[in-house]
View 1 (cartoon, rainbow, N blue to C red):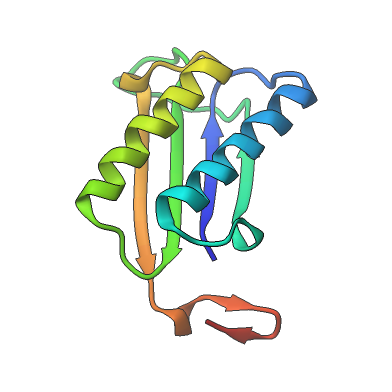
View 2 (cartoon, rainbow, N blue to C red; view 1 turned 45 degrees about the horizontal axis):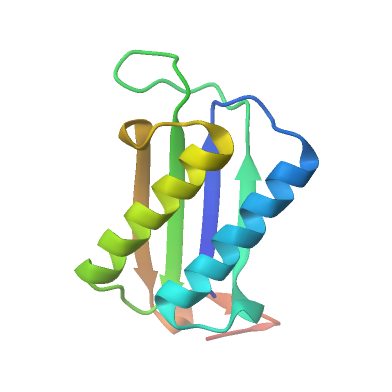
Length: 116
């Protein structure tokens, strides 16, 4: 049910780098939300045409979705953690990264032919 989706204008790294980043983010998201990692989904898109502040310097947009709410303390901690992982693995500065946190009711999130 938790999802983390990364879109970045940074060039596409080698596949092992992408795979490692997705594994790191999956584990971190599960830990932050106290959810089983078996339900966490990750997605990654690179080379997306994007600007930030009128500049084409590398930028990143992250969506974090979860069935249920997230506290301000959780979102603050996730923001720090995910920005650090993106900076280390993609070279995108935290001040060029936006993160959208969104909660959803269980009935608005489908899985396995049903909903949560």
